[in-house]
Image 1 (cartoon, helix red, strand yellow):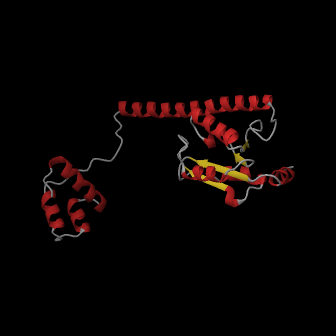
Image 2: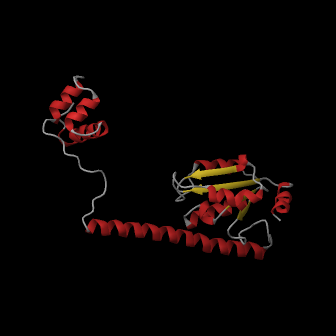
Image 3: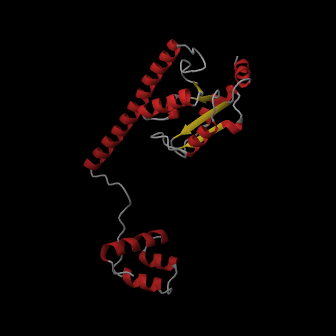
Length: 215
């Protein structure tokens, strides 16, 4: 069935795929596997490791530049397109109405603009899109709220976030001056202070901000 569908589409249109994960350490394989049956050429697969909070994404912009009327864009789920309800609707309408591109959402067969081109079909598709887009945004807002509540609860228990406070030794200025005059290497100066070279640079900046004595 997939082979027949792919052949029918590629006779008259080009197929594209868009894959997005939010973090660099997240794996995009699950989305890529879901797009395999549709015969999308490798050069037409656009993979992005960016947040979906807006559409200011390099790979998505590159995809827009390649898409033209009659092309078909595949995405696994509507939240891969974006997270903001209003922007998802705006982009969907821009792609389907202004650029004349068809969109197929793999996980939601009803969201397939290649089918039911009549007014009723368009209405049903737009209605499903609106509901799913709103749900995607609500899920994101709930996640952010849970994160904020978790941080507030941790603060209430005395949990501190951010860089660990490092005690600067009393003779830091003397060490710094010897380091600045190249009497000590980076490693030697850090060892005298009792911390790493990276922390040495950090403490130098902190010291300057605090009393401005180091020049």
